Image (cartoon, rainbow, N blue to C red; front, side, top):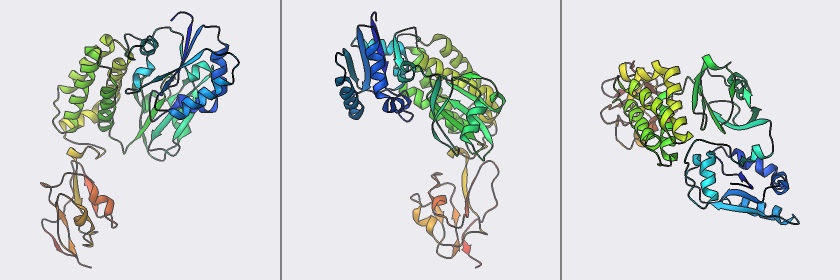
Length: 367
């Protein structure tokens, strides 16, 4: 990597293309910065499927009187590896972008770093009023992030994606952090931490390069254990098993993908242990999100016997007929939620551990 400078434009999160958004608005500055650098070898790494960006870069390079900037078009399968500098180094050498270690000091820059930005751009999602691309000081308090996004619902937690791999609660809102991720998700009381953790672990599993045991097998085990808990097969010892596994991943993984995956689970357990444990001990999903822990019920005082729910139920789990109060056969219901979406009377509800009293069989509507 001597006499080399590299700018990586591949987004770490495909759904949060920070680098591409900045590149789009600063394409001439990016090309100029690389062109003016004294290094002999100069590379721009771009997703080969992004033809529009490639064409724009080529057009800009043509305007230079003498340029030795080379565009490396790469086939992006897993995005997270492009956040690891050793993987980018492998790519420059003509190899697959597979990490071989923790990030070390290499002349490889993101678009933000190349432009010398003092702030960190980040995409934020969740049940919030303001979503999308934001810019914050690199050292920021989570409360400042929350205040920018605004939400009418009670805050529960905030997830900082790879490479940070951190899930905080309201107790850490005023603790200053170094913001290095491109993606943040904000939770409120309508979200189940376990449900989101299953999705996050599935993402890490799909993004894992498979090179080391603790990275690939570790994320596999995390996903399997969390999925078991979410499917009502959790055991009390699962929590300690996860903590032991994830601590080993943080110490033994060859790259920061496995480290971030382990850290995500550890911080989630540290901050939301009771909610996760509730799925195991009480068989209860507090947010009524995990399908195996909830049931659907039709309230007899609201049902008008319109038949809409029965018509949409592919499992034929709803009993009744026109102008009769309907009931749901719990043995047949698969908790898909289709019935709720078509009920204009709001007569169908989800229930967790506490169930409402409902009819045993259909009876004629009173009105």
